[in-house]
View (cartoon, rainbow, N blue to C red):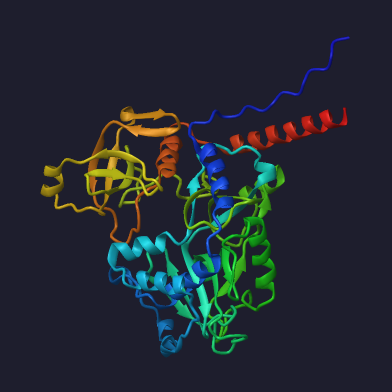
Length: 421
């Protein structure tokens, strides 16, 4: 009798990037990095509350008239590091201020390859469509700022110390939430929690932070319908284990908001300001209206577009740390076009000029298109450029994510059998 055939492993799309290697390095780096999380949170709260928004991007809303004088009464007990960081941020203007605020948010890389161990090491949830922002409540008021630093709303809320009616404990105690404001239902959907009643969560795992979002918001009336002392509703997101069932629920399940892709968080990831491979965003046409970038007319251009930053030496680079250079401009062109270091520039890329080498994208020729919107804070990341290229040619599909989870499950079952033997 022939031995039973081994179960056929699902097809896994070959990796095209070095994303997994950088993910392993990021996990190692965060375990070795134990900065003063309390000082970082305090400095960020102070900057969010007091720093003037970039003039070019400042927006005014009727609720800004709410108790504007309370800013004069703010007296935070800051550490020396907190004072220095807040003071430095308050002196920034224009593009520098936009970049500083943008780098305070934990930004996901774009998922180019399905990471291993999705079902055991990752959470997944549907990303709401809307404006990513940081929300801080303290001293009887609440302020939200979008990624370029401009104030989105100044309003009373049911967050701790978020309104004059709801001050408990020290008035200067602050909470900071990472949110997406979903305009259709005027709701702040909570992506993450950075600080709660003065307790910093920077060095806590994503798994713990998601637990706190649900438990702490439930202790308040922040999820109630809007009222006089609670202008906008806050809502925790349904976060799932990235099993086949969890992925299906996030991808196909009904949500109270318009979806804009899926977000994946490594369970062990700390809250890291800036771009990190420990958080990933993925999109297709089923779960997002915006998969491939469009031009100013809202149309998909025939050639891929990308936005890069001009450096002093003429090179044009991504927003990664360290940045990835995709080319350089000669001094004559820079002078003729009246360009300056720090400018964000839009380029078009022909398919035949693109090569993938050791997980990195190399571009033989860039075609200058112009400058992007002035309110934009930073250049594209390398992972976004690569995701956009893959979306046009070899997209990572939902079937690839399912296959990765199935393969992971089979490996776990095989390990269990070996242990039993």
